[in-house]
Image (tube, rainbow, N blue to C red):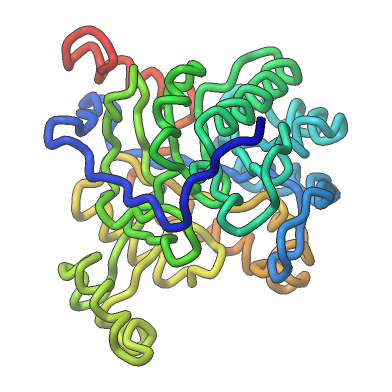
Length: 348
């Protein structure tokens, strides 16, 4: 019997409950962490295809890892199905885990993740748009493959293309996940059929699904009008080139903490804003194929790779100057355990 599919249109992710905010332990301080979307290569300008499963860029990942290690920064490698079923990629990641602080998580790209019961379309590239039973089956296959490859079940998750839907969080909780990182604060993918995160801020929160915590990817606003935040940024889309003009004039820029299309001067200002506003956990990210030139639109040649490295060097330098230390996968889990105990003994 064929699956019934969700109708077209984006899923508007509701704002968390007022009492759902994670109260990080005092001793945790202000920290940052890095998630790496560890995935296959594909042409970002062309339609997605199931056949795009190459993993050549993984050979460059140890170089990026060494740069991070030089600054004492671990990474959580969120691996998808083409990566975990590539023995060479698993071997490379196994070597990186020897630092004792980096870890493996899950990233689900539905178009290359069995079972293949859906057509490959833009709408279906957001796993949360699939029928509940198909989304659950894809998650179970990937989770099991990661557990088999690395000897440990993953407990942190990210949907490829940030593509969660109305069933995703309950499915993650049922599969034993403790953290979701699929929400991208302030971003709206509904025009593509994906989720709308404009009601989601930067603060982590308990989802209400078992013990599942949500750690949204950090988005900050810089510029003289930054206090207008997401509302003002949304309104600017109605003006011709409104967002670009506002950014060039230093009025308002939306900044995600990634070197991929985010200039370092804006990122450094965003880090300062976050520190000034008392943020407790900053989430940085990048896509693993950006570790080598020619695989993503963000790193097309050797010069852009040097700039990519320099971005991280500058960010790590400022974070150290501000006294913002890195937090590993396991340190975050331990802090969440303490937060849950302080809340009432169990993760909500």
